[in-house]
Length: 355
Image (cartoon, rainbow, N blue to C red; front, side, top):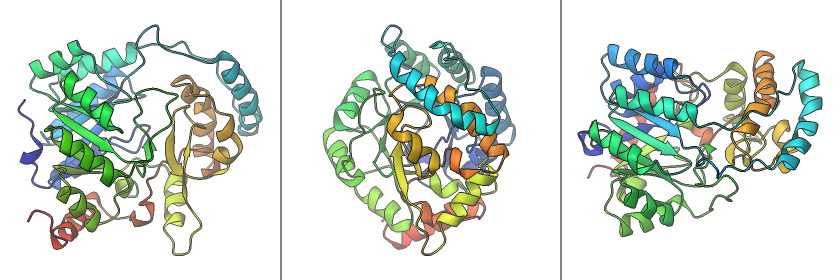
């Protein structure tokens, strides 16, 4: 393994935010600022993924990673047909109001994951992270053959141990305050509420594998604290959403800007409404009306809500789109990525990081 966290000039890692926010520009900007940016492969074709890897390298960035969503094993996937049928019925008025149709329930497939992994191996991406489960033993072997560091996102001590046994080189420890999808290893699992600090201490005390800590980071004191607890690097995502390099949509940006205003009532919620998997974001009407009805089914539910979300984005309607954000959302600023990284690390040093 040639990729090492200790080689980062700045121990900050840009989280892979699938669905648009993480762009080639964002990964390049994080890398140029001394950190490590991760490209998201979920919901993208092999051709698009390959083009991103090549574009990042063509701009002189060699230090970057890629993230993959681990699918259920063939034969282990459950769809809850009755729950999905009820959810389609609940989605129909939303679709009609948006002028779109709820699509047919897609067939479950692991083909896109396999194709993405092939591209990652072919392009010899230095860091490769996995969300929602463990890569297969043969997949770990393939990545190690091309000197890639295997990163597994975990939310419990038990998952951390399983990842180390599988051959993970780095653990991405995700706390409950993190924005976006929680990386539970099963779809129906209720995400643990154990604090990031407590979880990080427990994992660092029980395994020797290097750790990236993430979830709710808002300022330099958070970074310094997590590094002091044993993390080798700290992951950030929400803090990057308002940067010009991010692919955050206009209504998403507007909602974040409003949420950061002093006295704003904005808050985050954990919801299955959009994808069927629990994910944290700013509360909106879609969550409030549909969150309690959503079955634990992924990725089918994500596909079913897709047309509604896309229509809402085009209509500049933040009430029917994913507004993924961690609990540190109020600290997000509309400034360049380089400024976010530099200011965050400077403040972390002032709070004793690197000492």
